[in-house]
Structure formats: C-alpha cells, structure tokens
Length: 318
Image 1: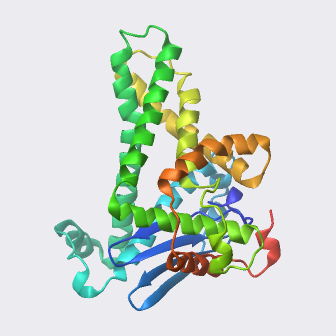
Image 2: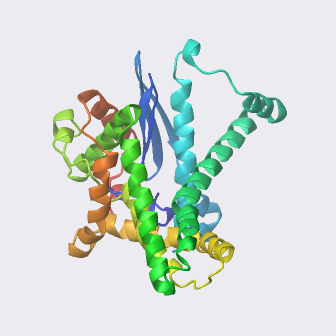
Image 3: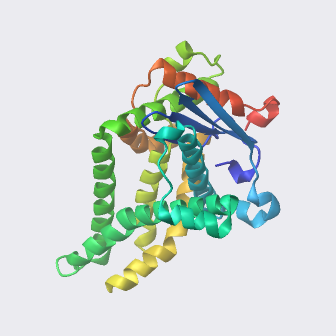
C-alpha cells in the first residue's frame, strides 16, 4: 500500500507470501513496481509489473480515510494474483485440473476475463471469511451476554475481547500446521530483507540474516490494530437487537479499516515512543506468523526487493 497512492519511501513495501508444495515465493511492492519471485526446481522465476494506481484516475480514492479500504482490497487482489502466478510455475504434471466452475468461467468469458473473475471471487471469499470469523462471529457470540451484562459498554468490551481471542487463537492454530511453517519462514525473510534495505546495508544474505523478523508494517500488526480500533468504533453503537448490531458492524467496518490503515502508516513512518507502543502488540503476535528463514528463502526476498527498488533515490525518500 502506498502513501496517498504516490511514490513512497523505503518502508512502504506491501508483501504477500505464496507457498506451495514445490513452488514457494515472495511478492514485494515498491513505489512504482511490484515483483513476484518464486523458487522452482530450475531456479528463480520472476515477474515484474508497473504499479497502476487507481487514485491517478480517481483522485478521491487517495483521500485520507478513503485510501485505507481501497489499498486493503488492492493488496488482497495483488496477493491472489501472486499466488496464481506461483501456481502456474509448477510442473504441468503436478498442476491441478481446472474445476468445473473454472472451466465454465473460461468458456463463458474467455481466459483473460475468467482470470479476473476468479481473482475477484477469491478476494471476495477471503474478505468474507475474515469478516465472518473476526467481526461477525464475536458479535454473534456476544449476543448471548445480553442477559448477563446489562451495561452496553461492558458488552462491547467483552465482544472486543472475544474478537481478539478468536484472532490470536486462529494465528496460533495455523502456526502449528506443518505446511504453514515454511510460509512463515518466507514471511520472516521478507521482513529481514526490508529491514536490511531500510538500514542502507548491501542486500546480501549475511546482512539480511542479522535483521529482525518483525516489522511494524506487517499485515499481522494491521489486523491486530483492526481488532483494537473496532472496539472503539463499535462502542458508539448501542442497539440491543443482534441483527441490527451485525448490520452496524458491517456498515462501520470500512471506517475501522481506514483508521487502522492510517495508524499502521504512522507506526511505519516514525520511530518514537508512541509508535513503538502502537507496534509492540503486533510485533509480539508476529512471533506466531514469522520464523527464521534459511539462506534460499533470503535469496528469494533479496531478489524480490531488488527488483522494485527505484532507480531514483528521491523516490525512495519520505
């Protein structure tokens, strides 16, 4: 996500991780380019694209408290596209056959439109899953507290505690999965490579290895901030009816995402006591979503970030 959708500084690299049985990689985004680097049996395969910002065509999308939602959806879309590119690099004999739904979409709309449709559908499912699990489920469960807790503020607080508990439990459970552990190692590699670049050090495996695997601009930190901000924003709603509360949560969700985006941008731009306090919980949670990478993983991260570094140093300065 870029600041105000303009050329951004060194800290503004939004990343996605793609990991499969044989194909693993990293997507890195810079001020004007984004790159996907995947490791195959034959070596590294790269894809570099120029970033086309919607805010240049529609300036309103770059406005304060608007850009957060736009960039969140855009980040999800880029991540899905990176995963699809990663999957395409698998040997043909190991690629899965298209489902009937995918085949029907391609016959109906053609390959290019079919790809866009599948990406949109995947993004929709991802957002729906996240909203359902972390927003609506806690709201539904908190509805059983209506007869137990009379105070609306305390009920909203209890709902927030439920939301954070579900979120942390989800991260803990996924971190226990064997296949996910390598994804988290790639996650650590991207953070280390970004930190190395931010320190102004040469991008070598030795330098990257010495960097921390936590980063204030991580998606884990962003989601945790969403949990906290939701407690504050949702506290302004006082409806006792469950379905009305759910509707209000959905209506206020873009506000929550927008505020959270601005907060994490602030935490990534400055390094002071306030931003360190803001970043501390998210960095602590990153112990669940990052792990130490091996040299090959760091090589992938180095290649990815190298491909998006701007040639003009002025573009890399805040």
